[in-house]
Length: 162
Image (cartoon, rainbow, N blue to C red; front, side):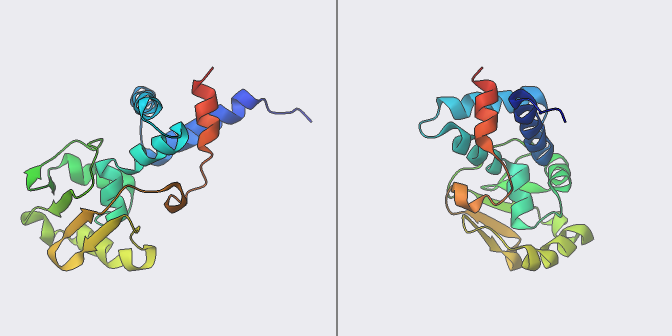
């Protein structure tokens, strides 16, 4: 049986993370560059940045059933951050940002179904959801322990360090 090379394993891990967050190579590389320049552990910085993307936050808050659906909600102008329209899925949210659904969007059946389903999935501790007002608040930045997906970020760091 043939042994899979370290490079192939690292590449597969990167592709898995890119697929999870719905990103192309160029954008992923840009996020890695930001994570590398930020103080702290590069792999954890990368995951923190990916988790703080607006489309991911919308998914985590339960306004959408998937990251793709959340991305579409953002692109179709359903979302406001701190009272301002934001239609860029890769927008990075900060601590104390308030994410709300526009008034018209509150009647959309898909969004209401997603909010009903969020009870089963749960909202991460770094986010706060006010379901009645269609509002979410970023209370803090996610820790590595709060990102429960099976990601080996060290493999991605090793891949880009070559």
